[in-house]
Length: 170
Image (tube, rainbow, N blue to C red; front, side, top):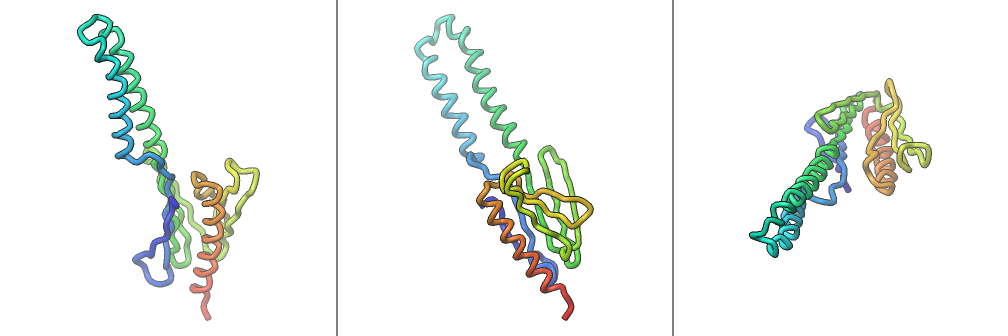
């Protein structure tokens, strides 16, 4: 799953942090391989016209095709460069979203008042997760699959219950 719970370096009252990122079906190594194989397959037919003036007429179109493919895949990588971090920090819950192109958004609330809502319909995606309880309602993990969002909502509710049980004085 493209998210993980990690222990934090702070005391026991802040046991976890959640990191979420979009799934990448084509890793960087596959990206390089795809561009290389595509360039090779496009140049194979050019071998038949090597030395003829037709080569110079077709070559710019092949270069544009490879360059366009590289640009589109690279743009997809940059636009999907998202990291959401939810940290349980004692009496505060912090959500930081590091978006594409360096855009950074933060949200924080008291974990005792935070509610995890799973909207089956009506959101931008099915099974849309929102956190409310602070100054505004925020989305979480909109880039995950439906099944992952359902599982994540269940895990978040449990983590909030566990955190609140630890921080309530006896």
